[in-house]
Length: 371
Image 1: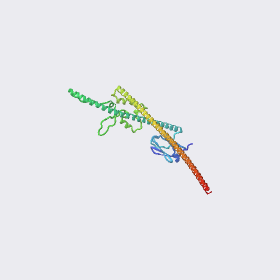
Image 2 (image 1 turned 180 degrees about the vertical axis):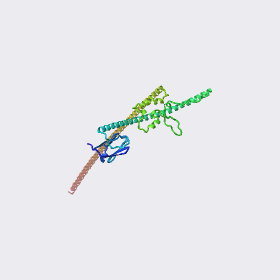
Image 3 (image 1 turned 45 degrees about the vertical axis):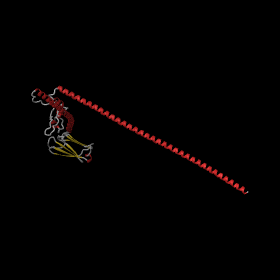
Image 4 (image 1 turned 90 degrees about the vertical axis):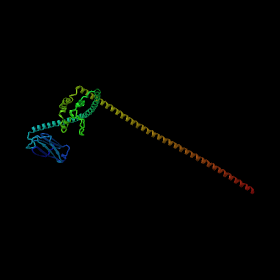
């Protein structure tokens, strides 16, 4: 069962302040919630719960709550300035409950309406940005169209002057004011010349971007009623102000311009699609070229490694052959040396034998002489 925290209150003619005591850990909790309606104040801070049915109605939009380290302070503003005899209502419980439920339902409706207004305002702001960009494009087209028309008029003026001089006619006085298609669509502004160093702002071609009304509604969060799609305001605007702004343009011209605009948008979309395909193809080719280059580099690296391994293998084989040749030469040399030494030993032995034989023969001759 939830606990009821201790509270105190004080009031003046226009407001009432309710101070609710809570442990610091509870007051600092993220679960602390304070809800205020016209008829009641509710605090939820587990394990604490407090609900107060107020004596009179208050302005819940102006009410505020402050969560401090050991308390929660709620300030409510009375709808009817007066002194209350008590903080809580003296109505029966059933009536107080019905009053509280009605106030909660009214608050939910106001919150839902405020959320819908915020969404509609966001939609209108996005729509304003879209039409403002369209205004800039139309203003640029209007400038180009006026320059082309002025060049054409200047060429015609020179041609007619030459014809009048050649035939001896007097040149006509006065010229019609230059008005282009986009001049007829202007709703506000549209100056083209720089005056006193001030560059004029772009013209406005739609009621949604009319500068005077946009500036007037800029500080308000409420959506503009004439463009609110929930009440059909935008349809009404399209049927009224927009048609009035282009009243001089015939229906055939509008259809032609709309068709040309659709064709232009389709052409731009085709161009963008073709460009995206080209960019994708270019990126694909670039990726393929990079992958091919990487594969070639990998193959070259492997071929280099294989060639290096083959070279080392051949070098090892050549070295082994050289060592084998050297070992064979050494063996042949040692064999020749041993054979030479053996022959020398045999010759020495034969010489020693002959020497001994001669010595023995000499000794035998000496013995014979002595006898």
